[in-house]
Structures are given as structure tokens and as C-alpha cells.
Amino acid sequence: MNRSSILLATALLVHAHVNAQALGGRTVYLEEVTLPGMPGVQSFAWAQHNGEWLILGGRTDGLHQRQPFASFLAADNNTTAYVVDPVGLQVWSTSITSLPAALVEQLQCTNMEYVQRDTTLYVIGGYGYAASMLDHTTHDRLTAIDVPGAFQAIKNGQPLGPHFRSLADPRMEVTGGYLGLEGDHFHLVGGQRFEGRYNPMGPNHGPGFVQEYTNAIRRFRIEDDGVNLTIADYQEVIDTVNLHRRDYNLVPQVFPNGTTGFTAFTGVFQYGQDLPWLNTVDIQGTSYTVVPDFEQLLNQYHTA
Image 1 (tube, one colour):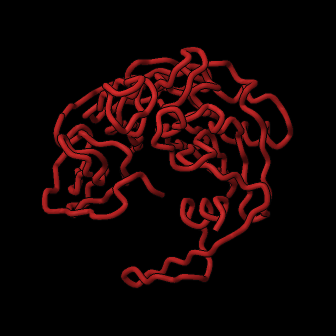
Image 2 (cartoon, helix red, strand yellow):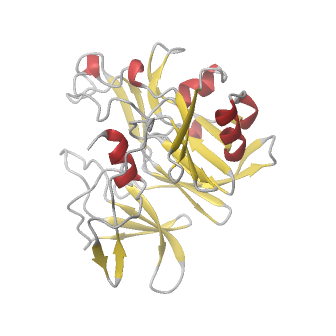
Image 3 (cartoon, helix red, strand yellow):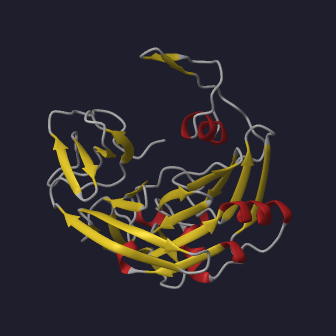
């Protein structure tokens, strides 16, 4: 199966009539679909509008290499914005390099946090090589994208700039976390700040790096009048044990008492050993509860 098919069949869950699996009276169908021009990308941000998809960022080389000299190469950053029509089997694309330099650097990186509110896609942070720093970095930006406007620009070869707005804020300097939206409040949960080139041997080997987990739930509103962006009502709660996780899955949840929130599933890594967490954390606002008897043995990394 090629990477385009994997993207369609597993990441975005295209429904059809192959490989059915019953789930409590419901059935999920997955089918491989080949779509000419479909990009093979990993760890991208995406939004949808009228049944079509916007794809930004991520990497074109799949899972990163383990050697520092070959890992997260700039040449494999995805510098193309795509619009995909999965029904009409069409793909449109354009380079993002016409955007301001700070935006280009952020929007070609990997493991950004993102969520769509109405017709706006909000993208936070992300990790990758930044030419302005001559090094790999975690970006400190919140970027708002007008999804219908970006669709039209990409399809018609028009400038992208009018549909992108951004601000710099050190509280947004996160990669590998998760961004959830409940009501008017955004929840930036977990993740890390990573500076320098990846090295599985640790921060004191080779070129070295700085790695700081956020260990946090960051809750805030984004005030957005279509021109100006403001981060408001910011709150942060830190737990260096139970919130010490990244590259995981955060999903909306309805709890047994009927209230709503999120559940953070497992993630990596435990202190002192390269093993994932197995428990989950239920989140409501800035309050959270660890579920110690939950054991997730598969899919600890961020998956669709």
C-alpha cells in the first residue's frame, strides 16, 4: 500500500465496504483508495470544508531517521499546501513559500497542534529546521487560517497571504502536544519544547539538544475578529508526573455523569526508561483525574 493510500485509509477513515469490524452494533468499513496526486505526508495539520480537505505541513519522508545527521532534514519538510476532494478524486496544490518567512518556517514543520473552529484552522507550534536560526527549533506561533479562502487561493493560483494571520507568543512554543476545543476554550495539553537536532542517544551526545516537556494543561480563549488575534483568559496547571507526555491522542469525552471534557491517552515517555505511559487522564477545564487502572498497550503515539 502506498503512502497516499495509507493516508486515505487509516488517517482520515474513508468509509466503504471492505474489512468491516463490528463495534457494539456499529460497523466501520475501510477501503484502500488510490487518488492521483495525493501527497504522502506524515504529522501534518488539516481542516475540512464542504467535504474537501486542506493539508499543511508535516514530512514527506515518513518516520524520522535515528541518525542525527539524517533526521528531520529540511529537504523533507512539506512546503506545499494541498486541497483534496476525496469524492471527485481531485487534488490541487501550491507552494507556501510566498508567505512571510516566519509562517513558512512554521507551516512546513512537523507535529504542530491544531484544531478547526467553524471555518478557521488554528495551528500552534511545531518542530523543524528553521533557516533563520540555522538549526532545528520549536516554533512559538499561533496561526489562523481562513479555510474557504485558502481553498480558493490554492485552486485558482491566487496569493495565500490574505488568508493567513499569525502572532508570536512563548506560551505557544509547543510540539507534540494536542489542541482541543470545548465551547470557547482551547486546551493545549502536554507536548514539549525541543531545540536542536534529534539524537536518540540523549542531549549530551553529538550536537546535543534541549528538551523540556510542558507537563501542562494550558487553557485559553482565542479572540479573533478576522483581523486581530489575541490569547485571552490564559490558565495553566502543571503536573510533572501525570501530564509528562507527548505524541499521544486527546479525544473529546462524555463522562458517565453527562458532563463533557477530554481524555488524554497514554503518550511517551516515562521518567528513567523509554517506555510509554499506560494510563489515561480525564480533563475538564483545568481539572484532571488520572485513570490508574486503564492499560493501553498499543497505539501510544499520535494516530488518527
